[in-house]
Amino acid sequence: MPTNHSKSILLVLLLQVCAEAQMSKQHTPTIEQLFNVKTIKVKKMTTRTNQVNYGYIVPDDARVHDVHAWYSGYVTQILADTRYKKVHKGEALATVYSPEVYQAKQDYLHSLEFNEKNTSPKMLESAQTKLRLLGVSQAEIMSIKKERKITENTLIHAPISGWIYQKSLNNGTAFTSQKKLFQIIDLEKVWVEVKLYQNEIEKIALLDHFSVNVKGIPKTYTAEKSLVYPALNPLEATATLRLLVDNNDTQLKTGMYVKVTASTPQRSSLVIPHSAAIRKNGQWYAFLATDFKGEYEPVPIEVKPLNTSHYEVLNGLNEGESIVNNALFMMDSDAQINGIY
Image 1: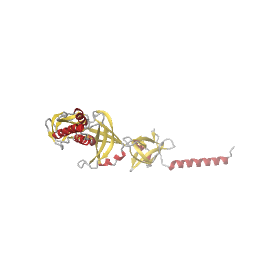
Image 2: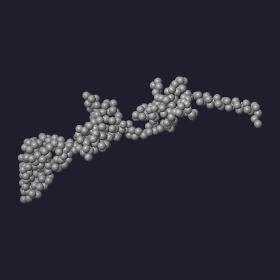
Image 3: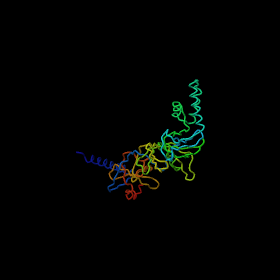
Image 4: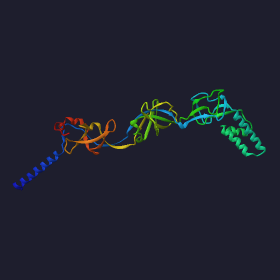
């Protein structure tokens, strides 16, 4: 049986332990909340930062082809007779007569006849090259060689497949070698010229995924970042970002107004909901659940907006810690009464 002296010693030690526990508990100011407080875990979230801009569909300069004749003449029959007509590579656009081309055909025919009697490959090659440089098709050259006859007229062919955006010829029109006869644009790839405000220019380097949407077209197109133009529009103080878009289905038309959504690479961020942070005297706070049920410790934190519902935590909290979901709920607690934060 313990003696009275031993009981006294045990009582003193117990009181001492309780006092130390109470001092440890009071070391960090806490809020005692008797109501049902909901808490959440600080967690990591994989996110992208999005940016929305607007722009227009324009032709890709590399797919714009001006059609010239390399000689003078006049049109005997226009075949591509309307603007915005779809043509295919090699398709005849017009039948023309040119004295220069007709003379070159005669020279080639004479060279063929002369070469049969007196072998002269250099003369034959020179006559054939002249026809080729004047734009006479290889098919017509081979026809002259095979049939041993020539035609007065010559065909002008489409150098690429696309749409005729410009046409300066009609039946009977005279032309020179300097005159542009047609402009054909291939729309299988197009540019999107996106308008950017000055403060958005520096962010472009961080964006790596671009999607393009157009009203009336359900498909979402993926675009490739190409170039930020070096000059700004002084009237609007905007820069222009060029995107390259595959348009194999040719649904995108030049002049269309488009919405461009750009995003950064995916990254993992430590996040809390907006409701879990509160700002007082220029400092952000969250309420951290302590080891004692119903008590919460206000901790200063650093956050920045991540999206419409979350803050990214820069400092002050760790993944997995429990915090009060509604920091505003703590405003009426004894923290305000006692001046804890």
